[in-house]
Length: 490
Image 1 (cartoon, rainbow, N blue to C red):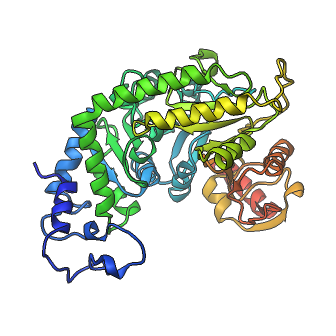
Image 2 (cartoon, rainbow, N blue to C red):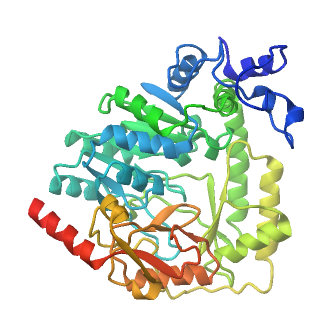
């Protein structure tokens, strides 16, 4: 069988001269820097077309489907963002109604905007100490679907950025009882399928569409993802149509070859790779769990928090019992030990691991955290007063996302926006989960939390005023007109 990455390697060494795109003409002397231009081609003879695959790309996607045990798999070179946009668009008709977890990535909200959808949100449970989201309760899903029979699809994120896994099997059963599909953003769980050390993938638990970011936890280049179609509840024809809309018509062969090589490596050597990885990971977790001040968070399954399972590849280093916050710990690891973390939060820092991590890499992390933990400046606190903090405080949805984003707006100081309807997003990045969504009513607690994040140096994004001094809100006249229109429709 021809493998895309092998064909590209061979073609790059051949004497074929390109009188076609790209403009660098596979000439490394034409670019400043070291880039793989010899492998960067367009849709030429023998290399197929992602939007009409009949040869090597068709075979590659079929192999991905066999590897994951699903009906169909699609290469996505616009990351999981493009996959989410396509999945939502194919599953829910324009002006339709979707049920989503409130802690979904901003791409889900962008899909709702583009399709002018009505959105009903289920808020996850929350760990009040660390501020980590728990899972999505199946009972809440059942209640929402019973109260809103017009909902056309359910979309949740599992695992979350912090590795929390919801009860996918039961949620899928509930969705199917209501004759609608379940879409699971499992972007951070592409590795689940390859080791029993990790939770079971949503693709094996009844989800209808599952989205995997290969570049997040598997050895593939940034911007590479898979969209798996696992049932007939969503039209394959519509999926391919929307993938063609949301992805470039000039897909990168370097990225697609990276996906092909990644999946080949997993098929041929994945068992050995994951055996070594999970062994190194477990030893690191054991070492880090012995630290006194910088504590490894060992999240357990907890039905009361909707936590059905936990992805142990995420190392959550809690600073709650030290004098540091998550951002300060991240800065120490970066500046003193040259270790770059995945994410910093108020009360923890998150280290993302994968099968590509080395034994030496785990050793460096453990030694660094142990050294920091021995410092006299860190004071142990046994009982902490939990402050009134809620990253994902329940906000009232006054208008549809599309209505708010397209409405007449005005800009007002952030402190004066309480009670008004937002016309824009606000989120910490990473992970890109909105604190505020267009159409939601701004509250005093939200402003208080946003100010606190900024004072601590966290990266608050989304507001069109990059200084974060003001917020774009819907004019009161537009808000009232929208409410009257809604009342007439009802």
